[in-house]
Image (spheres, rainbow, N blue to C red):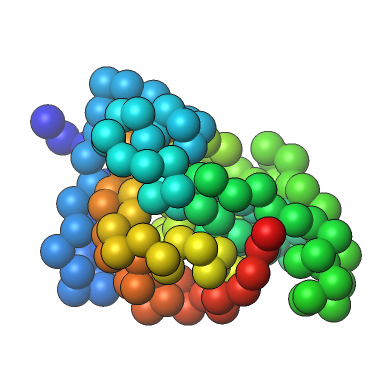
Length: 155
């Protein structure tokens, strides 16, 4: 089965990084962390949630373990600037993807990325791949090279 255009874009970026990672499209929804974990039969903590925030109009991407909630006041203090949850229009404009399918890569604009240190406790994780039905599995350590992200404590 041929991948959707959004999933193809993610697959192309993964290939540019010379990683043997494969985007898969599923019949089941992967829109939420729990749905994704159920669809791929893994622990909810192995799901990489992509959360878009903004600060002074600048997009920020937080890659958070499915078992965690982003502690906005703590992270805002840690980073030294206020965070505001991005709305659907801003998210789509800056990432090129709709909420529920935002991958950690292949965004429409460059986005500063922060990685939940908890994700790195799992050797293998699953991330969204452009649609609410597509994902890819990767070694958590690859998030650093794929995104150029900074590892932080988000909880």
